[in-house]
Image (cartoon, rainbow, N blue to C red; front, side, top):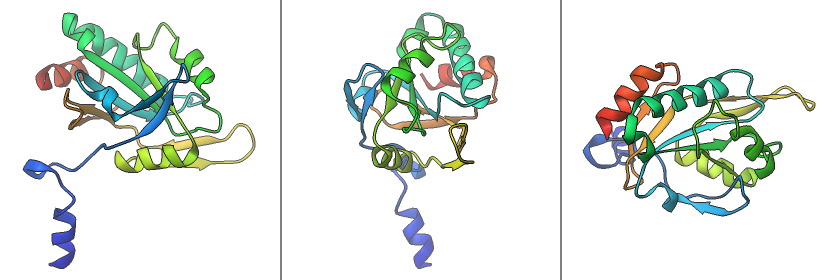
Length: 175
C-alpha cells in the first residue's frame, strides 16, 4: 500500500502523469531557452538525435505533414526537437539538420550539457542510451511525441508511427 501511495503521489491533476518541467538548454542559434518557450502555443516535444537513421527523420516528416493538415491552426503548433546526443548535436549541427525542407518550418532544436539533457529527459520520462562505440555509435531512445498545451502542461503522447493524418487528427482534437 505504501508503494502504491508513493506512485500515485507523482501524478498531476486528474490522474495524469507529471510529464515535463523546468529545463535550461540552448537552441540551434545558441540562445538560452527554458520551459517558458512552451507557453502560448501547442508544442510537440520530441527527443531524438541528428544522426538517427530512421525514427527521428520519419517523425519530423510526419509532424511537418500533420502541421500542414491542420490548416491555419498549424501555425499554432510549435515543434521542439531535444537531442539525446549532446556530444555530437551542437547548435550548428542542429541548425543544419533542422533546415531540411521535409521537416516542420520553425522547429526549435535544443541541446545542452550531458547533465542538462539528462535532467530534461528525466522530466519528460524519456529513456535514452548510447549503443556502440567509436564515432558511428547510435542512441536508443523513446520515440513518443509529447503534446504540451499552451500553458506548458502535458496533454498527451502521440505515438511516432501514427501517420500524419491521425497525428493531425489527435492534435486538432486537443486544440
